[in-house]
Length: 237
Image (cartoon, rainbow, N blue to C red; front, side, top):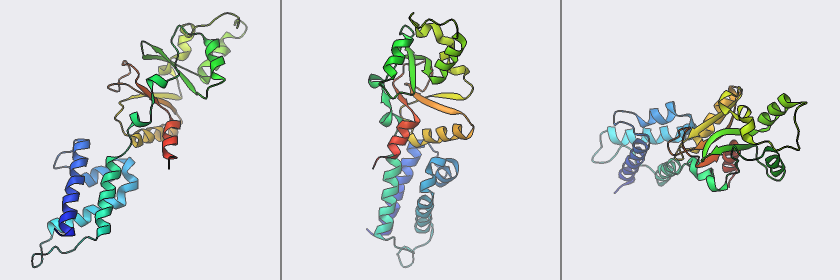
């Protein structure tokens, strides 16, 4: 078997992997899909187009005396292998998420002041408020500031305050500049990263993405991904 035969076989594997992963029809161009429709593949664009051009030359040009018009080098085969491996091996959100069993959260019946004291020792920017493992609110500095501002002059810190007492301030649906997402665990990390970037450019803060079974808001929380989790992944050696 020549390198040209090997390249064609490897490209078929690459193409099949893309079609299966993204449910593309046979009539749809994987190159157009990867390079023109999906920004997360921008870093691979040159390699994708290069491999496609080599494959088209081998597949669609007639052989000369039984030989392919070009013979790919071992480096070209390695490039196609590397491209297939990197795209197939992309991290999914469940791979970097904080799983439920490690999640710092509170319930509506938990005490506000005790939670604030706990946060002095923990580097958490947000505290999910869960009821039967379903998200009902988000506690963070903005929620606390809004609550305290409205309570000035009538707040007795010696009395317990449950999160249930401040639910209007924890309602993430009505926040002007803060956004939450609900996603499936098998969503690719680089796709979520783009969403963080797009909201940033819109002057809105995507504070977290919660993983549920089907990516629906009314389901049990299985994990949490923040921008810090994505940044930590990108800094890995």
